[in-house]
Image 1 (cartoon, rainbow over the protein chains, first blue to last red):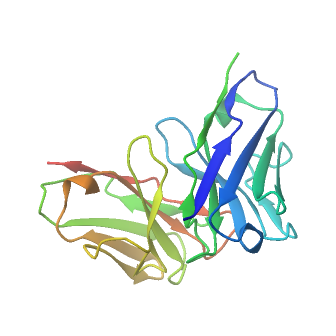
Image 2 (image 1 turned 45 degrees about the vertical axis):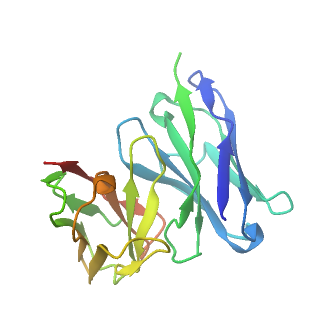
Length: 119
Length: 108
């Protein structure tokens, strides 16, 4: 059974930093592309970042480019999102999601971790 | 960037009836579209990929159709557990992946 468990969310002041983690199990983590998607309170879904299976290809939404860094450790079956220079508009539930099981969409999702940026 | 537009924003349907949700892409995306279902407090769940293929474990009452720019998600006979928000998303031209704004399916 595919499991994705996010952690690392919390309350942070504007301009601060936070590192999210996503622990994966139930599949061969090193063979799949991974993603971060976020959802502001009461709002829709927004793609944040994607990383290929071997970290060769990395992409970011314009809204986070230059502030967020995605990475993965295939030996630890883990995905990360380093978030710097956080803004109020970054407040959201952050989900990790796997691509490529069925499609190039987001086939399985974690339960999400809430990031709140507020003074 | 491809813009995805869903309609209606809210759809009120009685249990047992059919629901039809629409999604339009600002340019052709072939059949590279997925549908998700999201219930309150839960993560999205993949329903349909490739515009018309049900994901594993998805009941047959869910069906997807369309290609190019016009897509439809149909739920043939609504069950109580189907009332949720539904999102479409394209993966034809990315980055960025883009989502529709969602359709809330509510009980009439």
